[in-house]
Image (cartoon, rainbow, N blue to C red; front, side):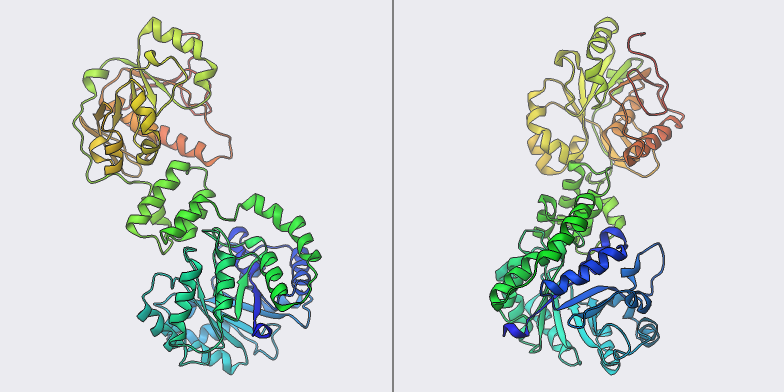
Length: 536
């Protein structure tokens, strides 16, 4: 059977999600040459697509002109992929196909076309096989997200495929959560309705991509996908450099790995260090909970998301469902407070008419600790620390503020040891956080997150972001403090998106008629009035 097994590398197609399919000509030619030397049978060079918005490189379209610029060894089969969503409308299907494939297979420089489909698109897109076969192409269909389908659903989809001239039926472990035993199970289900060649595309969320591919091989799959260094959306895929070694051993042949390893050292390792594909604990959780890996990829590439945000989003999507990526869902997942804003604590008796010293997490607090502590002892402001900030003597801090459920859960042991009361939206927090803080004195001030909005109530507030600084500013405003001295709000580098997010937040707050005057007393990059702590 091994003489019928094909290794398909789809690095430029799947890896393009990281660099907008913009690979240099030198890399592409070196990649093609290394694939042949390493014993890869098929190379999927990229997509064919009619979507032209935004910049994308050549591998997003894999045009005939692009293919003509590459020297392709005769032993290597070349393929392209089309997203089934572009072919799902029966009314425009033929015109789309004619635009995507103006040349028949005998004139084109590729012979394989794979269509990637979700289950709900499958029946509408399958007739495309008739048109493509009529043009002489080898036709593959990739079924995505089958791991969460029932046996009857998978069998039904396989039987549908059997009604059309499909050359290979793939299934993709789209969420990266399958085990080898589950891989075997899905293959058994597919075989109840499909007897033709079977392929698998694995993702490496849980570090099982290669194992799942090899189990599929043992169970009769004859098309195996991989990418160089696993480069691919989210945690990536089975690694070509490992799969070809396994296949060479099973086939009893030798392959030349030198060009591929050189390509990895010169091109793909630097790209991997830059873009950061590969599995990690976040992708592991996403795979475990059937969450689309693009959620994690987007958050890891956005410095506004810290560890607490990422874990909170994963937990939100675990409950609410995250199998289909949606950028709006990602934004909403950061806002996880339960129900309408409600609280029971009024900050005014503590804060009205008082000067508040707000301690952030920046190095400015520690750098100027002596002056800050001297000021506190002399002037007796109300000292409010964000989260577990502990750079100054504990008995000089009056109260703490925290609002991020996952951050609270992570810090709950620390909070229970700290002596100060904790202002937090206690009644609105998830149950596990409430339990963890049950022994802590909390002051319940409600919170609602609404874009571009500050509102200051007696027992609750509305703020534009879940950042703790927004919550703290709302609390001191509801408490009618006299002014706020800010220390430890140093800011980030100019190219860090958190800088603009924070500046936008501060500007929005300062534009409110009810805003309390803000004064930075240690170095800051933000547009704030500044007075030195040494001059106060």
